[in-house]
Image 1 (cartoon, rainbow, N blue to C red):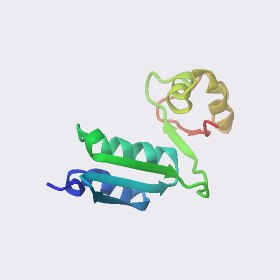
Image 2 (cartoon, rainbow, N blue to C red; image 1 turned 90 degrees about the horizontal axis):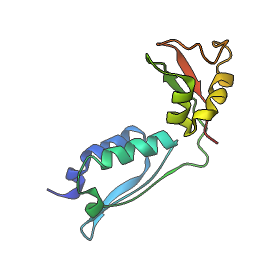
Image 3 (tube, rainbow, N blue to C red; image 1 turned 180 degrees about the vertical axis):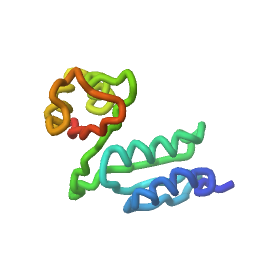
Length: 127
């Protein structure tokens, strides 16, 4: 099995995001290089690569974010047991950033302690 076949899932994931770049096999490695629109797409491509247990032996990858890409709004659907702090920790890396999420959703939230399962919240960028 060649490396392109072995990592077909990752290649198809990248194609699904319309990654500009390539996956080229040479010298016993798969060189995976490209540009996508946002960090979430980068992460999902890496997740697909890492489904192969020995990926570290096969892959040389550089997947970056297009600096000219327009930032897309990220959303999150509230699940039972969620809090804004928990969502902020997961998506922004800091539980104390929960007010950023609250501020971005003042059109539908009146209190940061009152969110309901099923609500779709806008998640601001971590920067």
